[in-house]
Picture 1 (spheres, rainbow, N blue to C red):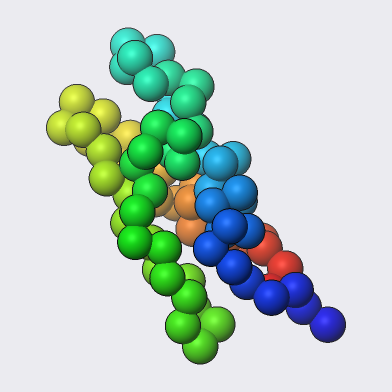
Picture 2 (tube, rainbow, N blue to C red):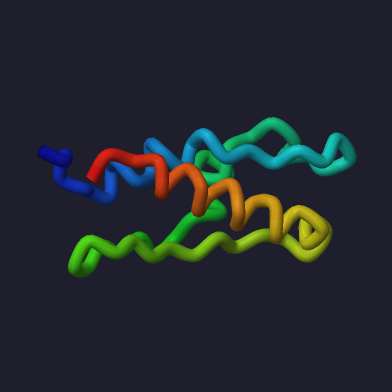
Length: 77
């Protein structure tokens, strides 16, 4: 039996995704605490959310998206 997905569980899971560019003042911060995640929604077992980053962290966009997707796919639910 799978656990019920909640916004809180999704946000906790996304806290494992961190910025990595050492020149960025957010390096090491997770995307939730940094305020980069918004619009979390759950519908029919599907999860959606938005990651908003500053232009200077654009080089990290693909890695952040992939890491966030992987963390959600690994959730029980």
